[in-house]
Amino acid sequence: MQRRQYGDAGQAFPIYITVVGGLLFLALAYFAVGQAAANRNDAQTAADAAALAAAQERRDQLAGAWVKNLLDPDRWQAIFEGNAEGLGLSCWRADQLAAQNDAVVLSCLPDGPLGYTVVVETNGTVGDSIVPGTEDLKSQEKATAVIEPRCEFDLPTEDTGDDTLPALTCEGMEWELDPKTPEELLPEPEDLFDVHLAD
Image (cartoon, rainbow, N blue to C red; front, side, top):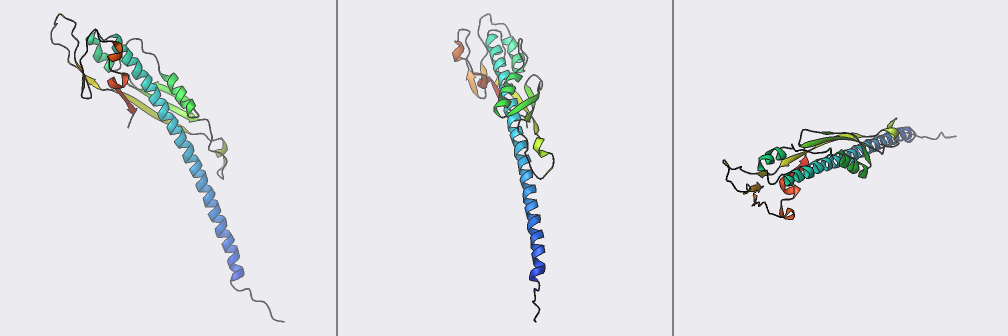
């Protein structure tokens, strides 16, 4: 009776199974890394939005203070530097924007008079994966938004004895201000201040 010859075919099958198993494990590992990266990206998006919202709220308050002190140009420079009476914290806006991005604010602090730094944590987790512990893992990220004044003006060197206001130049646009100018014709907050994420 002739013995059946299996040759190399029988030996290759276990190697094939091992290679496929290894590739499958790597694919699952890359998937877990992708899940974590997506979760971190969500956290950074929420942090950016929250910090910008807080800074924009502070910008709006500063613009309101400028309008309130329109007839007192001596106070303008302090306001453009972020110092004005009656300013409140703006973190409530950070809370709103973080919630809209499915995250929660862990900390929100003024970064000097012209900025806010916010730390958020995602509500969602990385999820189940081959990496142990990821099912409960959340991502935290931080962002800082800053406010920059866009306007310049020159105070008169001596008392002119009238109510003439200094011309305000904002990014090349000149505003000829008059004490009787209706409020709706004054520069908007975005004309007075720029808000952006810190580099």
